[in-house]
Length: 166
Image (cartoon, rainbow, N blue to C red; front, side, top):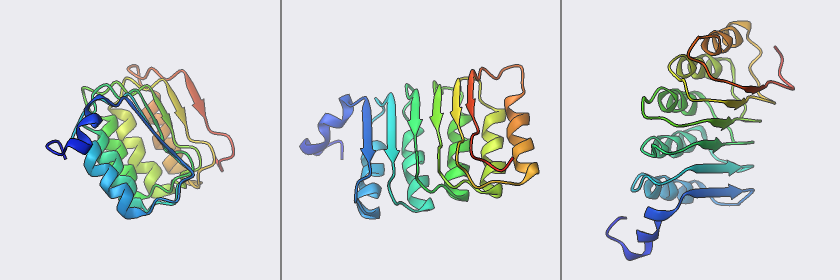
């Protein structure tokens, strides 16, 4: 993509937001490929889009090279095991500046919550975390998340857990 004139403008984009759009998995995969070609994003949002766990994983994986990324919103997007694994990897990056993570309504289940919790243990930049409206009701998964947040290096200032079965 970098050598393609149509995609050269991607190098200066700092924010991508896609809301309630009928884009299919092929378009989101192309977006993930394009995102991996540059590193200037500060904010990324995909909201109310019907994508699979594997597509979510590809998008999150493409964001790992964006060292100035401060905010990710994946509101009302299904994130399963693969997406949670990639989120955990992104949270543990030493160069991360991620301060806000909005996972409202992402349908994270018990397994995904446990995997996501692993990422929280290695993160010291997150200040806001929205886990509202998720499907995990396993005490062990929530315990792991709270353990990840209850560390001296944790800088979390705002945590939203409304509408969960804790």
